[in-house]
Figure: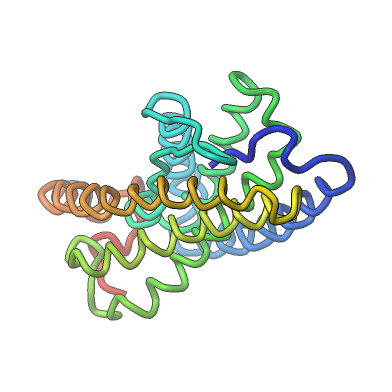
Length: 223
């Protein structure tokens, strides 16, 4: 989902800095909530896990350029369900930054746009989870339909933000490239819910994780 270099340039890059700042404020609020709920050690451990996972998603898993961006397997809803909203947000931001610093420095000018493209859909997933998951349901007991809804919210949000940045930078002239990217990226939706269910199923069988500081409390415990 990286915005290709040159699509947004000059003063227009400042909008990405502004949206990234807003996203950081929301992530900060989530982090404060997580600190109160689970403590600093748990938040740090889960954030480190999310960072390592995000770096792997970007740098190790298959990815390929399509249209105005790249298609990646960014399992945002998976990170949210296993680690929680705040660690997932921190991990997505830090993993993306590490990849830019060490492997793709040409992406750094677009960092504000790229991190916004990841975090705002994650916040949408967190909001949607409160609506589609009953308070008495632990995440390990989710259905395919519920995981599909969360995955669609995340991946659809990523596509919408990529389209916005492309139009912001170049107008509607290259919208066919945006449509090509969107069509390719939607294939991820077919895969992510299955990954979510597989990971949740594995977690359900690992009773030793119940009460662990390495997963979100909601994974096993109903709200």
